[in-house]
Image 1 (tube, one colour):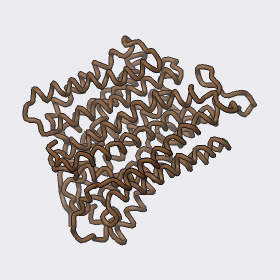
Image 2: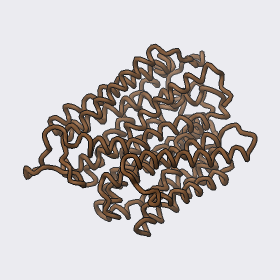
Image 3: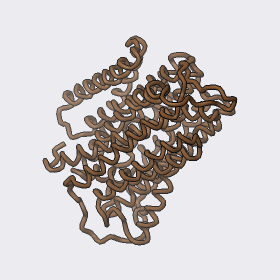
Image 4: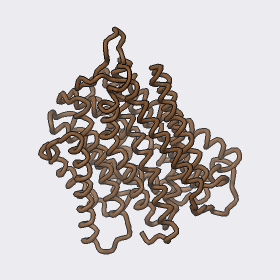
Length: 475
């Protein structure tokens, strides 16, 4: 990426953050079926997990935006490094809260811990995303952010496998078995008893990792990348139309991606009768598809001149990505490769999408949106394995959306970049509201039919990549 040598170490360290918050965020998809069993919840109630977590992004970003409007941009004042350390420590505190929450078995306590975790991630998102974008040339900003997001997706890919194994298997039998309202032991779909330790021990580990990362960042030498310009008050970032339209785009993208990821385990149980330990393998392919697409996107949107070499590298990344996902799945479940071969068809379609997108962030965003709409229609109006792979395939085409929307939205904001970033992170509220809406629709129409409501968000994303990203400044 032709970055200065001094930036490469910083970029690698920041990328570790993307991996960690991807892993922990995807753990929500494991917590939802866990909470659904423990507290005997319907779909709408179970989706409060995502409402609390992603709602915190909105609250945290609103607070950040108000502060930046009244006294100036906090990140510009304290620097990206301190912002990241603060986010890590808040996240660690939230993870440690899972221990008492599981001990006393109060759903609202879990939701409070998730809310605080979301606040910590809000600070990390506000600081880290623009930091990666400006840690090099503007022309390759989408490529860099896609690369970081690729490691974020690596975290979301292995989280269902590792997290599901820890919660529903490895720690499930530790400690006193949990009882339902009738006093009977609560069991996983495979018949194992469930215990509080299933979530307590993993989240203690996560919290400890966040503390360790905070210490590393405190002593790390990171370039400040301060603009040196006067820090202004007010909501000046909103005068850029690409940002205003981008806020809505992030809302719809995050909300749709989270809605699908949150329901896949239950969807495959209804569709094909898969228990949690089997369904989570396919959830890993959903998030793994996003990982593959983001790494491919880092190459596709990078500064390559030899197009044949570029495409061959994209194909190689796709094959390696598949092997990583399948290898991790096989080690845990011994799943036959024949069962996941249809994923290659989806990868081929994804590569075709990149070719049609002509390595342009906006055009690729529009093309991928239409692919997703086709996949959603397919999963609703088909059944069996076709419906399964159609919904899994959405992950591949979701891959580049965050990075492309984010870099298109903050391009040209200059000293208003951090404030613009806070507004984009605020739009992660979509991850709180759309899953809740889909959960309510699913309770009425059935889970499969409820995926139809997600077509509207992707139509908007197609618009943003077509016209909404174009820069206009209003007085």
